[in-house]
Length: 53
Image (tube, rainbow, N blue to C red; front, top):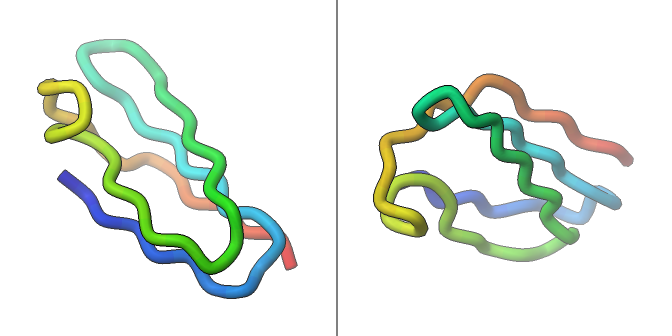
């Protein structure tokens, strides 16, 4: 599992893969989110992080 804490940027976008499926997460500013393995039970690989200010 990955825990993601965002700062005051407008938007944080994460892209992950799990068993061939690509999963995207758009996270709001100033938040803390659990993503990945413990959320849906599959192993995930983090492939990209993008932030917008």
